[in-house]
Length: 302
Image (cartoon, rainbow, N blue to C red):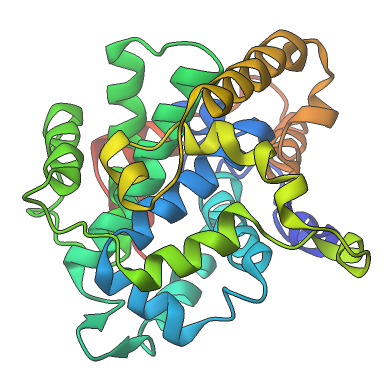
């Protein structure tokens, strides 16, 4: 989630940011439970790349505090999606500066191929989670979401010519990466890091209480179910009848009850702050930012 200071910084009345209220990005990324499923799935997909796993292991406190990594990833992504133009561009600059210092033997966080893969996991995981947990997206909706978010990859150093040009090419790229002949090979380092994701200590103040992570690991089974079978098997994650039934039951319960909850309970605070930012405008909310993000990456230029 986000802190009060983070949310307050996102208020710039009438500024639609890099996307805007009519964008698919604003629509898909607001549901908290979807992101809590897409987030772990994206991290596991990222770590399946040996170079990403090495960088995370050597340049973060992921093992001791996985919530910090997950929370930081979500906050950064949502600042770019829902933040005002100033906040979104500042977050892009901050991440690019941070990534310049993440390099070692066999990896460099600014490598365009690694940046493309990390970007792709976030987009793909959002599409997969929304389709499985909320409702199936039609092809035009998914294509629009991809085209809207494509410039994010460019903002993080991926050459435009290297970015998949449309949803079909993007889908082929993710499938090729995840295939037996692709670069994804779950290493021992990745398996070790995965344990911190799937059996994390309790977050925040709850962490002061003794608890065996195995007693609540089942709450992440729906996220495990979103992984491609080959990647799930490579992590050594058991996916038997019990896991499938529990994951299916939790997903069905979430689908049935979440739409009945008020938005203030189920939606990300960044999305709600953006809604408030746009609600002060007299007349129709501007959608120029969302439209231009569909056409080019100029809105992301800093």
